[in-house]
Length: 216
Image (cartoon, rainbow, N blue to C red; front, side):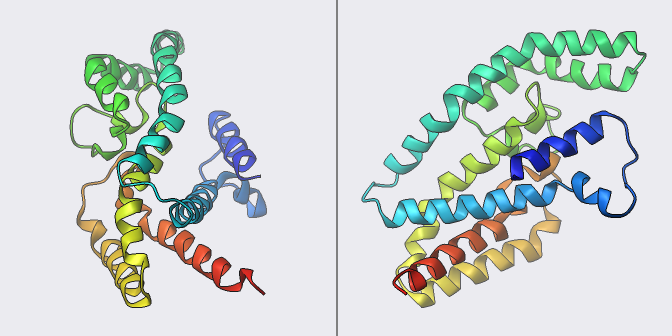
């Protein structure tokens, strides 16, 4: 259901409808809420996996890396020649801004390949080079980078799960990040972990509540 929500949102955007739609129809365009719920589910799943696993720190993200990376990077490589076709189509339609945007990806192509190879393209700010790293060539891959960042820090966060006091400390830490993150440079689509950290924490809380009441 969440994936369909995102799908309909992109259909609406690519069809060129206004940025704000009338009444309840706007709900279908506001698919960023679906992404927030995705992250809550990811937080629940991470906490569940860590609670039922004896994996050491490097083993946990290692497994997740090979779950995320192969398909993402294959599609990224396929998307490079497709971007050429997209740029030619934009040029025919006179969309000069789109042509310049896609050309900037090719100007930094090897940097984009390197960042996607480690799935950290989502940490590059808008004002930094390479330009548009989170959505270069394969725009949906920004979310893969976002989830990968969560996988990298989740074991450290889970260390604070051993007692209620430590978990409350984790909550205050996440709240502090939310409070001060407006000082961070903006990142395209909010692909950098701090811009969604509260939803990961909500997912962790949901797992703790689930575990608390599962016996009943």
